[in-house]
Image (cartoon, rainbow, N blue to C red; front, side):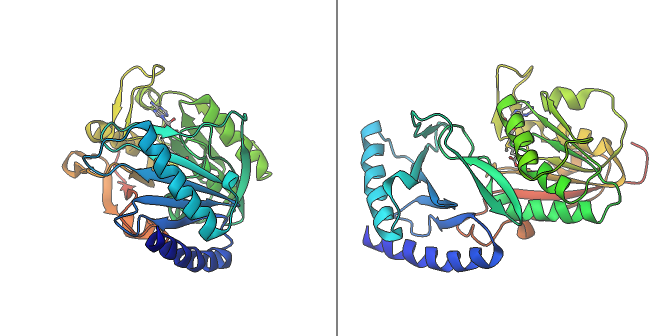
Length: 318
Ligand SMILES: C[S@@+](CC[C@H](N)C(=O)[O-])C[C@H]1O[C@@H](n2cnc3c(N)ncnc32)[C@H](O)[C@@H]1O
């Protein structure tokens, strides 16, 4: 583990300085920098969140996972001088697309982290997501700036999760943000994030809905900004149809564009590695531009964690 430990130490020092300057509590320290050690280590405040990846073609038993976990845990605690109870693990299975988490018996291990002057509730053990996707830090800032530059911005956040885009938009002065999310747990989490930042609920709406069905209803094109961040795949019991971002993105994007005012902006993002945008089938966009180069933050170095496009609605009626 020595090469890993040396690299981890170097990266922790380098990114620690950078994060202190930026006043960031949550960032990636180690991004599978060495091929022989295919893990990521993220810092969330005082805690570390470690994802261990299956390499292609590898078959692991639970015991294999435990062995690796313990070896990494010892290497990480020694190198970064943190306690064992500060390191949390997640196993990412490439082939099956399923993940294994370390579930603690203690209910709700929540704490808050700061990012760009805003606070976010995170939980590294109890749910599928931590509550704050670190790779979209710059996207959140970009959207906040767009809101600031738009008078009385009305924003739609689709597949809102724990509503971190909503919090940035509300803090930037949006007149109204509608957050659409299937999971009540995440939506409540989003409302708690709003309260944490002492932002009034006011006009903001937290809508527990299947976004695909919600988009199908007749609605006026009255949004200045739409954020569309669908999962790669979803077939929750609460959904009428399954969602596959490759198969369904044209419909999702076209419906989202139709809800924008002329000149309105759609931010579409996906973390699906093999994604191909079917640009020829998009309707209602005056321009379509990939902005991934601006949205991936410097602590994500290994490979692009997501891709992001900015689409501007045409002035013509749909
Ligand atoms: C990629 S995550 C979005 C993360 C979010 N933008 C954030 O910053 O926290 C996708 C989200 O879509 C939600 N979801 C899945 N299927 C959905 C559906 N049909 N309608 C609404 N939300 C859905 C999931 O619960 C998950 O929170």
